[in-house]
Structures are given as C-alpha cells and as structure tokens.
Amino acid sequence: MNNRIIHQVYFWLKNPNSEEDLAKLLAGLKTFSEIEVIKEMYIGVPASTEKREVVDNSFSVSELLFFSSVEDQNEYQDHPVHKKFIEDCSPLWKKVVVYDSMSEEK
Image 1 (cartoon, rainbow, N blue to C red):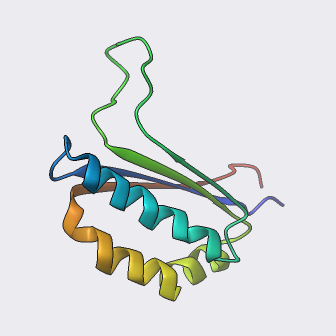
Image 2: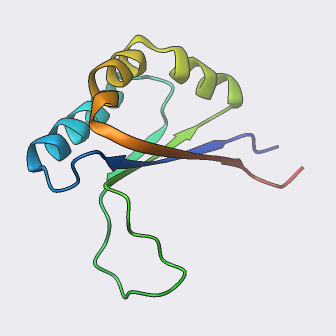
C-alpha cells in the first residue's frame, strides 16, 4: 500500500512586484529542509511556459512536499519550523491554496 502524501502549496504575495518579499518567502520555505519528515521538497516560481487557458501562473511561489504518511504530514503541520515560517511569512501573502493528494491505489 502506498500511503505517500503529496502536499502542494501556492502563495500569492501581497506585493507581487517586491523582490524583497519574494526573497523572504523563499528563504522561509527553505527552512523546511530542517524538518525530518519531509522526504522530498521542491520550491518554485511560475515558469515561462506557453500561455494557455488551463495554465494558472498567477501565483508568486509554490512548494511541493512529499511525506511517507498522513502522520508525517500532521507532524510537519505542528513542527516548530513550520509554525515559525507561518508566523514570520504570513504577513507577506494575500492568498494561499493547498492541495494534498495521495495515491488512489488500494
């Protein structure tokens, strides 16, 4: 059984043209490397891909995290590094959208 959890988060900055705010958010996300239960991590910004109706590149930053289980993802949510990130960086964003998924295989 594959219980891996994929946690995708998209952030929209209050000041999307601020390089300083972008740098702060990226630096905050990079602190997640200290959280042991994260198996893989990817942090990105919108790609310069072809503009198509189905592509939403209005976000400022995205993160993609992989966990071995729901329990590990819950531990991440309560981890002091994650809580400090929210405390320090939440004033920077106007919107956050989270997508959590797992394998549909039984």
